[in-house]
Length: 320
Image (tube, rainbow, N blue to C red; front, side, top):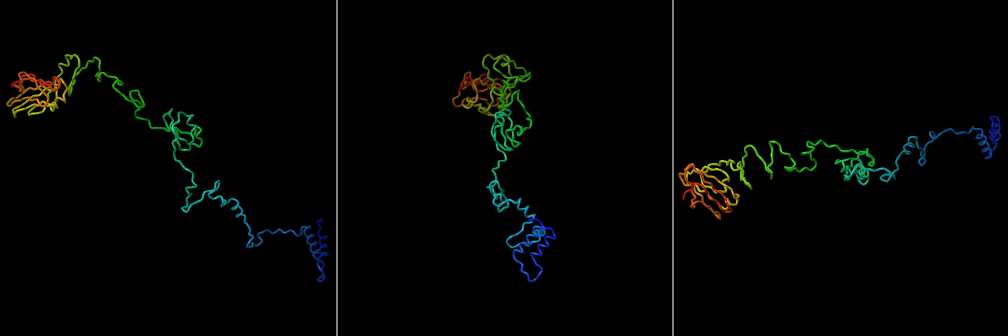
């Protein structure tokens, strides 16, 4: 239907709605009038919902609520896969919804860089590189990228090598060179200079050189009372003073066990007011000239020597 101008519209309305109180207005007349108004844009409603009151069932959404609803998370996604974590009664995420976390994991030994880049791990995990002897730790997100690994640094060791050797070092005398003032005793011919003191038994196999024969024998503590031979160090010179009473040196089985064959004791009496005698004990035997076993004459010399197992010989100035 064509849009009517104002004059035509007024004529149509007057026809449909006669200006009298008695005339009847039919439904068709009402519809015709409404149609004419619509077609002529006189019946356009421009009011919006702001002018309409909400009901109890049908409600309006404001612009703010529309935005909020559009960005709100659905309750169905709570604690669900690809959804969001929930909170427990303690306002914390339940353990069941947390991933397994390893702060640092040891990934084992890698032979080289290529082997290291094949390892599977996360930030903080580390491995030992056998080619460098150091640890490497993942610091990025891609353990296949060498730039996401960090070689750990170590403090410089105060000792880096021993006698040019590193690692587990075991040295013996053959690994350390002699010096002019530090020499080793070895199995070959050797010349030792300077004074040497031997505290204990010095045993020589083979020919004894003049220097060894002339080696000085140390002077022991003066003897003033009886004693067992095992308490008196061998290869030592002893003064004996018997002005306080008789002195007996007993050669026991223990003395035989303690000392090697060839061990010697040298005795020289400084006072023989009382006797100084030697007595064999246990399985030992003391051999001497005429079986004399007492020291005779002050400042004389007498030597007791172990000549065989359980056998000692007393040589020197003796009396019955």
